[in-house]
Image 1 (spheres, rainbow over the protein chains, first blue to last red):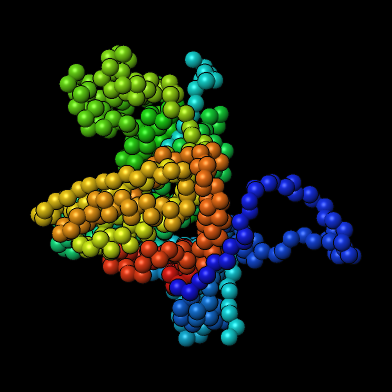
Image 2 (tube, each protein chain N blue to C red):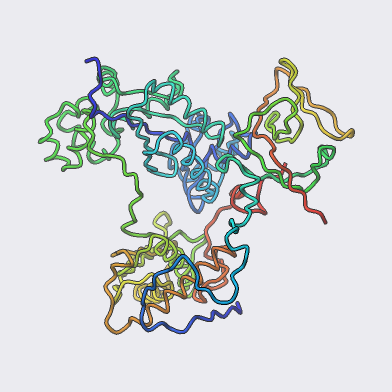
Amino acid sequence: MGVVLKLKPQKLLNIQLPLFSSSVAAGFPSPAEDYIEGSLDLNEHLIKHPAATFFVKVSGDSMVGAGIFDGDLLVVDRALEAKNDSIVLAVVNGEFTVKRLRKIKNKITLLPENPKHRPIEITDGMDFTVWGVVAHVIHTLK
Amino acid sequence: MLFTPSNKKVLALVDCNSFYCSCERLFAPHLEKKPVVVLSNNDGCVVSRTDEAKALGIPMGIPYFKIRDFVKKHQVAVFSSNYALYGDISARIMKVLSQFTPEIEVYSIDEAFLDLTGFSNLQEYGLKIREMVKKLIGIPVSIGMAPTKVLAKVANRIAKKKNGHGGIFDLNDPQTQDSVLETIDVQDIWGIGYKSAEKLNRIKIKTAKDLRDANEHTIQKLLTVVGRRIVRELRGELCLPLELLRKDRKQIVCGRGFGKPVFELEEIKEALANYVTLAAERLRKQKSVCGTVQVILHTNPFKNTTQYFNQASITLLTGTSSTNTLIRAASMGLERIYQQGFEYKKVGVILINLCPANRNQMDLLSYRSISSSDSCMEAIDKINARMGRNALKFGACGTNDDWKMLAKLKSRCYTTKWNEILAV
């Protein structure tokens, strides 16, 4: 590996200097200095419940109508309540699937967003759980 | 008594059910209700089993090669251990648990003690904790509640046994303690090992109740002060309070078996250098330095070959956390004990004689080299934190991975590597 580390010249004495919070005037201060608020963190925007959030990669085209494409990254939040019309990561008979949840009275249907695919009706004999709610889709433009 | 005395604590032990297996199931839901086992490092022995695997009669700790045909026949799902995954899921669970009380001791990767003193309606609160962990993380837990740690362990044991306790058992009531402790064998008490249990059995102490009601002094003579503490804890007197802060480790151990037998010194040296690198990283993380490096080297005791086992200790002039110094010391130790001709199975390093870096005894003559090495280590740690472990490593670690351990059945690092996340 061709990595060379250049280290600072050795300090002969390790003297600790106090750190002052105000800077020394040298030239004109930036007029924005008093307004700097730190930078924006995308995690903060996309992840409301860090412990309960998982990333999942999409394969397939059954949800293109909802803006979810093959290869997209989903931010799945298990803390969110799955409501009617939520897009969920569900487990049907042991298999993962991403679909829109339709809850009418006691009937649950998983709807694709692509006419090529069929809705999945959840019937009594089926194992069904909602693994998490899809909170965001991250789609990279090529 | 109308009120519980104010000095009585309520501790809850939250323990994940078949933790490693449950982590695997979270990302492989088709394994729900199916038998699953997880193997130890190097695919050695069974270290985690689901209830279904237990029902098939697979014992804890059995070597994998002994059940290879059996698991195939009964369609048991087998996984190599995936510590990156388990560690991440564990951290998430602890985060959720710490929302229920500020007083929490993370006891192991899958257990935590919570102080719930003063909370009313414990059963309901326990159920809430259980539901939240299941919903937010997807891992089932059992909760045992009692005034002491030893009793909380007992309570947890009962919560785990399925018969209708809903995964929660409250052992705060003295009458319940009476009837429960009668049913617990002494060797199943936390802190009582096989040998201690034998000693106790010899003086007719068979159950946890017997031990609780035994004479403290007799027990201290037999099992030292450790045994006496257990007696007191069984009586509901708190002797082992929660350790809220993680204590720095007193020693750091790193070593694993080789995936295949290794003969050559150079190859063993490379493996050792990698383990030293890992151990040194941990050492710097807890801001300690190490004064003595111990190296162990041995053949496979389960194989019918000529056996060799040896260890060497190298004491350093001054404490250090610098990887290159530690690698040099470890290699020296290895050269001292290595002998040609054996089929080696494992090499490992143990860093002992640790002390906080800011209390390190300096060597009068080597101050300069230490400070430059410190900044070098800092730079390497920063680069590796940003670009991935081992982005930058010492030449001694080599590029040959032949010695790496077996993990043929490992699941993906679903939560810690971008290219291994769940695909649906």
